[in-house]
Image (cartoon, rainbow, N blue to C red; front, side, top):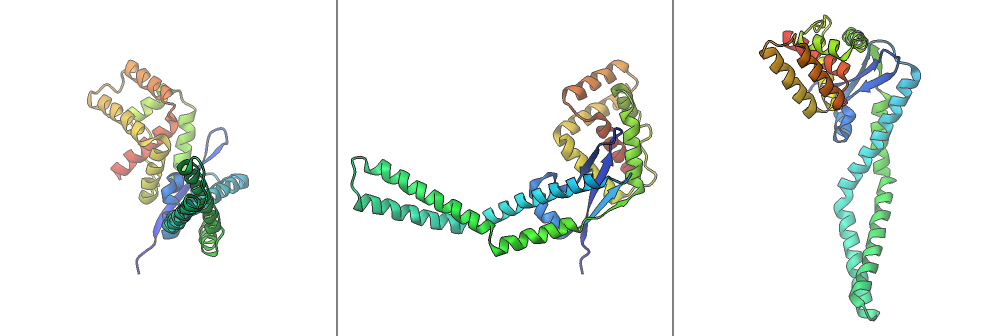
Length: 261
């Protein structure tokens, strides 16, 4: 029997006590595949507050609802389209052949289009409240309800490092990235670390994140990691792009740690 794939969800607290979650559901297209095929494991460093977990669960319920709507729309698109198109044709022919008016084509087209659109909306709503869509919705919500969070030493280390970075200036954070200080995690969970790095990429914007990484690697190759002017310039770029620099540093540390491991 094939082993079920694991998907990790992470809770972190910021230095000021705010909670945030990182999970595989940032991409709406991944909500249903992950819930249907993966074992879901929640990890935290410091135990989250009950209200934070409740908020997160409600967010997942909302994403489930959106995923079911997309699933129903894709599954039933062709039948709805064919039925609506048939009605459009029938209404158009009826109005054209039976009812005469000065502007036959315009009126008939508008009326037929309106009737067929109304039927399409009606069928869409009916499908969303059907037994089979309700079953799918209940199944996915059940998977959300089965998610549990547990303490994890790797996440605790990441969270501690995040808090440390949040107390530093942008220049100090960049120096820690470029000089690779405190980037090794003793309790590295390779599978969880790989997924966490991917989630941070999604949250920060993969394209912009990789662009800034490229600039940092260029500094390292040129052996200009101690160049204060270059570091200040990079800091201004991060601020202009509104990138969470502390989270970026955590991401860089995770990748460095994984490469060393």
